[in-house]
Image (cartoon, rainbow, N blue to C red; front, side, top):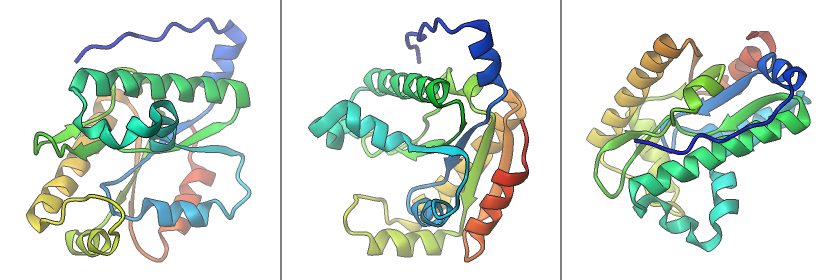
Length: 202
């Protein structure tokens, strides 16, 4: 896929400051429980910018957001580049570490395939990936109870989603030098994530 690379005009000192900050992608398959963990994390007074890729996209698209998954792939990619541009500017303005509730891979409802949704810009942008992992039956139960969202409830597909997410997270970490942290979803998931946020340095 191709996209237009954003043009930045940051000063050298601004770039040095940005390079010293962390940019963390908090990922996991749909229904794994990221929102629950973030709800606990948000109770803590952390010097982070917390944001969501989906929220930024929804602000960009407005009412058309509900049809995003059915757009042509080149249009999806262009929106993802705009999101990354927004994240960069957000961090430049605030001068803080960045934690983004996002996805590394998603099941494509249109094609039936699992897509890697990192853009070519994201590989050089993120310093860390925190992968929230779980087991298929738990995710299936969560998806079945959450009737507000259209999600796959085929257990075999969920297994494939989990396997693909784990494999791609490992491959991307190794190839691009992005630190990978894996947390198992459970009662202590938020505590483990806080430990990562407090301890890990770029």
